[in-house]
Structure formats: C-alpha cells, structure tokens
Length: 303
Image (tube, rainbow, N blue to C red; front, side, top):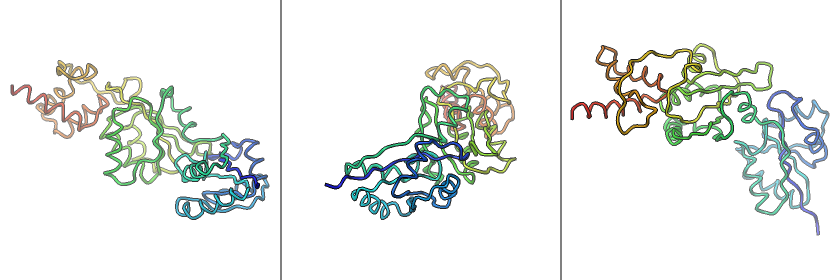
C-alpha cells in the first residue's frame, strides 16, 4: 500500500530573511513541491538560500481547484511544503482551508514554527499580553467593519488585528468612534529596514497617520475594554474636566458621569459634537456611548 504524503506548514520570514529555522530550510529542500501564496515572493526566499524545489501557486483565488490538486498529490504520497506570503500558513490566509481538508482525509499535517507578525507585534506592544484575541483582518466594508467593532467593544482581552495601509485611517476612525480613545500599538514593516512601532492612544495614532502617509503592512494591538479613562501616563492630551456626581446605575468607572460633563460643556457654549468628542476622548469611550449617557442624564433631570 502506497504511503500517504505529508503537508508541511512552513513559517517563513515576515521581513528579514534571516528569520527562518533550519528545519524549514531542510523541508523546503526535501519536499516534492512547494505550494506558495505568492510565487514571486517565495522565489526570492528560495534563491537567497539556493533552494531549487519545484513550486506552484496556492492562494485565495485558486484555492478550490488547486487545493484538490494538492490533496491528490498527497494521496499519491508526495511531500508538500505550504508557505504563505510571510509568517505562518493558516493565519489569515487560505492555508487554513487546505490544512483542514488534508486532516479530514487523514493526511499528516505538520506545522513548522517560526515568524508570526501577530506574536511579534504583541511582544513589542507594551500592552498586557497574558491573554489576547487575534481577529485578523477586519471587514473591508464600512458597515460590516463597524458591526464587528461593536460586537467586540466589551472584549476585555488585548485585541490584535492585521490591516492594509489604504484602510488604516478608516479603521482607526471607526475604533475611536465606537471604542473610544484606548491605548494601542501600531506596528508596521516588522523586522524590515523601516520597522516602526507607534505606542500611544487611538487618537494619537490617528493624528500621526493624518500627517504621515501610511505605508507597509500593519498589525494593530489594542487594550481590551476596561470602562475607565485613558491613564495620564499613557496619553499626551489629558483634559481637565469638572468633577461632577456619577449617574446611579452605571459602572463606577463612569464616575464622574461623562453625560453630565458633556451637558455642562454644551451649556457653556461648546457645540454638541465637540462636547461629545472631548468627553469621549477623556474617558476612553465612544461618542455614541457618551451621547447615550447624556440622554439618560437629561431624562433624569426632567424627572
């Protein structure tokens, strides 16, 4: 009986070509075929290490047809090395689908550990990483993205996202609007020559990228929901707001009440939109949440 093949999930560098294990290099040399998400990118890696194994493409646009082809090769006993654009296969790429189908057909699937942008960004973020949630890429459409952020607004664990440069401003704007001014780290071009990690708050990152053109691939690490204010040592723009009594029935972290503070600013002549933005930023809340509390405060004052 012919022995079945093995699918090797090979982690490749996310930037610096030195970030690859000796084991991955050996498997790339010994495999019958390399299935690559981007053959041009992988060819540079293979050329750098003088590897001449045959290669075929496997990406989101051909994963169904090419996936069946690769599964047939595994059934014939061939050894296949799967690589993504960069990092670990199966993390926010179609490699996960191929691995699942291979396991369903009882082929051997082996992961070769190595570089991962999400783990690297977490390590340098300066945020709590005892527990975290990896969400990959947010939806590209505005409504779906905002729905997703609303669904995650109460998540207390640190959150990790991937994002493209042409969407980073919209994503940060949505996060500021829905989640408020949380702490975050924005990592781009990790391990590459122009590596950059920006640590601060969502609004500070927004201001930075409004004045500096976003380039490269991004990984966002954000603190989870705490219900409290952005701490003074973590923000460059703390506001001195009046101390007013809290609203009964709301969490203690909302004391003094942001709704009352927004009302006071509005009554002093500050436009409502600006009052909501100011208080939301100080409390690490969304403008929508401050407005909701303000409406409750108004109803309370009427009664």
